[in-house]
Image (tube, rainbow, N blue to C red; front, side, top):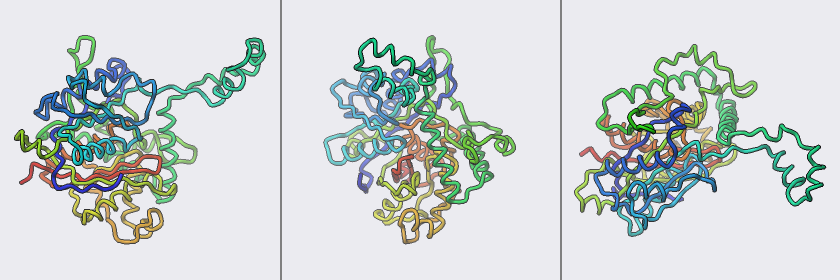
Length: 429
């Protein structure tokens, strides 16, 4: 997807997210359908528009599953959006939220759309349990298409170990850990640096939640069956996480440095943004929270895996004739502790930029005082489809609170792809 630079044409009317749910008791009570319907209704309510004014819904998912128990169209219908509205799904791991927002921008900019709801709901019920490749091989070669007596004979080759399932998300988390270890070795990131960064993420997340902001990004989530009890705080941020406690954690991989705390935990979450064209905003006399000024997506070499968002940011800022110093705040997805620290070392070293991304001119440095000032996925948790939407939402909230103008969102996946987006605070004169 190529760069699109805009002059305050696309406004962010509202944004909201649910708390990150991690405890099994909370997760089992709320399904993706109910979570999504509540999220859609709250986002529309906060934008001060009516549900029938939504022209389209763009729904991002971490991955696509044919057996998904809920669909964006079904959620939209429950939220009161007319059933003749189109709903699209985008499934592309962590950058899918940014890609959904980028597609919404293009449709608002070039097609006859006035209001688009960009949302994501990640629920545990969407993720399948898988069996081992050995079991699949057994079924394909020795079971399917065989006569009954041959199946009986093949049973002697069956092993109960074939039935051991694994959770797809946990397998992906292990891949992130492996990539995190590669980044640690390539950029010389020590365990102590990672521990300090994890502690920082939790501390800033707690501070951000406790501070009195102009508006809250979290909507209370009422729990069935009586809906009298509710959840209004994220489950994972720890207030008194010490370096001593982090140092006691055992690495996930043999001879590695990353522990369970250094990898974002996958949680249940929903996030949404309501985007509108400036003509609709002016016609209705609405007051937007922010503007999306540009975006860019990029791939990268295999050796630069997880760093593609830096290349996307370079292309975006170059075309916008801006520098990294022009960005007041920066939100980077914290897939692992080494990912953000590697971004810092990469952007502060011209030789690293040339070697890994082929960037020969000055770019950076990355001021860590501007990075993830409200914490990140290491503290909150991660729901793949909501990553980009939540980062835009939290960045905009911090820009408004601190009375700053420009922010940059960076999201990379573990598949050599990433994206960048520039956000402007609309509440400033």
